[in-house]
Amino acid sequence: MNKHAIYIFSILIAVLLSVLLSGCEELDKLIEEASEPDYIIVNIESKAVVYTLLSSGIEEHIADITVMIEMAKAGGETFTFYKTTDEYGYTETVTGSFNLYNEQDVGCTARPTGIGSWTNIPISSKTLSWETVDATCDFGDTYTWTVSHSLTISEGQG
Image (cartoon, rainbow, N blue to C red; front, side, top):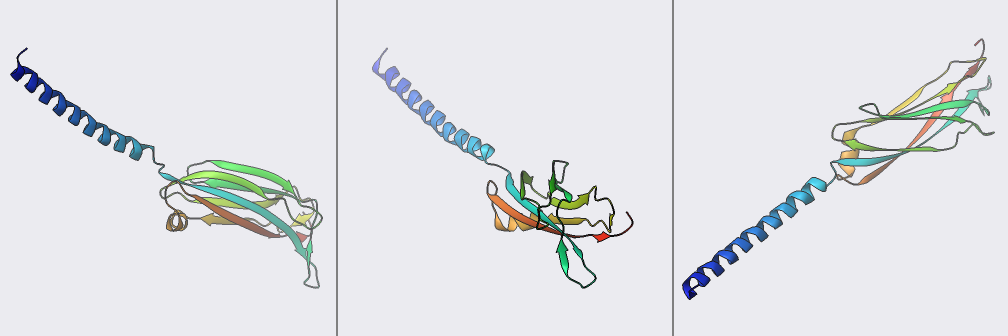
């Protein structure tokens, strides 16, 4: 090869390498954007208290009542827990975690189950909207939602 051909060949190699390397940066950028999450992680902590109102108007917490606590995300993903109230009328705290995508809401519901002669079976239902989560978090962040349910039941004909 003559000097002129080697010179042109060297220039072509340099141009080719610069094109390849600039393409790698663009490819790296595309890969990075594609690997960024498009959801916010929502951790839910929930518990319930069950009580009755005495004729005097005083709340009396009730032990040994089973409470179903259900966490559900729009789209069908759910967690369901059955917890029994302690001597003070409280269930232990249950937790669940969802990847919440754009425009999805998540709800948490609690209701007593299998309560025999107790009547006025309440349902407590609370919803966390996408707008609330999105206003405080960016994609990939974690949002913690603490939900307390207060359930008043009455004694009577079941």
